[in-house]
Amino acid sequence: MKTLITGVMLGFALLAAPLAASAQSMHTAMSDDGKDLRVSEKRGNGRLSESNKGSTGYSGIAAALEQRLPTSEIAAIRALEPIGPESIIGADTRKQVNNTRKYPYRAVTLITFEEGRCTGWMVSPRLVVTAGHCVYDPGVGYYSKSSFRVYPGYTGTTAPYGSCRAKRLFTVAGWANSGRDDYDYGAIKLKCKVGNKTGWFGYFWKKGSLKRLPTKIAGYPGDKPLTQWYSRGRVTVSQPRRVFYKNDTTGGMSGSPVYYNRSDNCSPCSMAIHAYGTYGSAPFSTNNHGTRINRSVFNNISNWK
Image 1 (tube, rainbow, N blue to C red):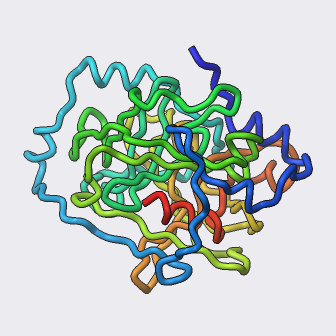
Image 2 (tube, rainbow, N blue to C red; image 1 turned 90 degrees about the vertical axis):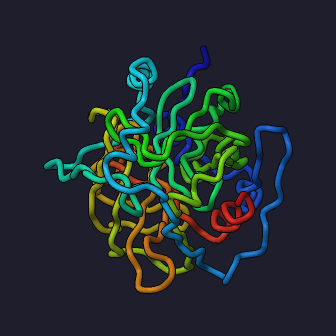
């Protein structure tokens, strides 16, 4: 069995390490088929990728009950280790998503694979964004592609939109080769186009500070019975490659979208990929954080789509 090297363990060890290569080369995209992918300079309309509500094709509880999973599959999911030692900061302010067939919660996915379970979020009919450490162990390599199953809107014992297998896995050199927490992002290209039903999140980048922007994080915390939960907060510290906040999270929520609702065509709109709890010194000791969607991250996600 492979040994999972979590983002916290590697990231904390390398926080003070000097960059061995340029920031651009650290964002060099990689896939599980061994091909390096050049960062695309095409950026859609520049700084924003639009959200999409999809067309679910489902109505009411009866449709969801048709996707109730076998007891054996539920037991197998529950046996998987939630990935990531994220943190509750002060009082637990998380709230359960009672209807995961509602947008955008149906576009949040439970991800299971050989070593554990994480969270992801749809950005197109076939692409799910998640944390790099949910697809790749820097000490070993990519997790087995055949072991991945992605369940949009999963809740309890029910998968309203079924599950999809992985066709291709992505991450970047900064995570794969150096295990740096500020490059800890990846994606899964699916074999199905479930995003046409569930819809997907928008995402954006900007040069300036994100401080004080609202933050909402939705995902699958490991201390809850395979249900989706969310928390609200604001950006407390904004760095070029990290976003910090006090939203409560626990293991299993690695890869969750860090988003807010805008007044344009990007609502909900993600600014970061959540992955880390509290550790070390400030601002890490008093905040959870994730990898910021800057221009290079934006371009990679858009290229992977």
